Amino acid sequence: MTDTHPAIRVSEIFGPTIQGEGVLIGLPTVFVRTGGCDYRCSWCDSSHAVDNQFRDEWKMMSTGAVWQNVVALSGGRPLMVSLSGGNPAIQPFGALVKRGHAEGYRFALETQGSVIRDWFADLDVLILSPKPPSSQMTTDWAAVEACLQAAQDKPQIVLKLIVFDESDYAYAKDAAARFPRLPIYLQPGNHTPPRPGNENAPVDLDGIIKRMEWLIDSVARDRWFEARVLPQLHVMLWGNRRGV
Image 1: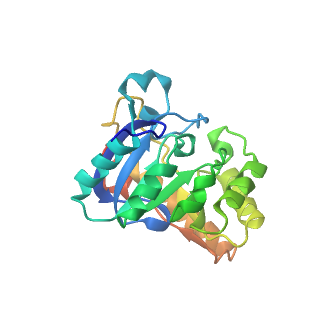
Image 2 (image 1 turned 135 degrees about the vertical axis):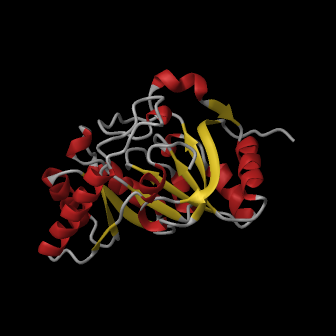
């Protein structure tokens, strides 16, 4: 049977492993990581899925082919599928989500909120992660709001903010004030992301943990009791390795 849906640009598909961050931390997950992004964050830890120099490694795959990979990795047992990137919102995932739901799988997507899709309403979890000042990107808050409108309150929706410094922390507080009904997750930034093609780059875990301690102290000092502070668990376990 011919797959008539638009092709999906894929960087890698891997798992099952655990989700390493955010609202689904620790949950067994298969990852579909797409290639391409409309942002160029200064501290991006997934350059192999962002930089055009890796385009030769990305594959244009049909919805059916992506789905076959997910089923093979999961052994046919339904679990959470994370759509990540890059910016996965660029890719046409609507048909994949519907196909997976028909077989009992669940889908989460994390995006900076710059690209709006009507199939956001079909997700189980939508993680909006607008990028703070340290990324050197500019947030279009109207676009983030449009993502919320597209989701129609159907999936679970949360905010996840990366924090490196005081400016990022102030940005996170502003984001929480803009969307007070959304649960917010704060994550200390990894200042030692891998250079392109070097997944063995060392990680400064001591520095990351110190940043997390500072972040926890800041939240406690400000009585910001609605925020949850979590690490990148996969970085603590496996450093900058891919496919985990």
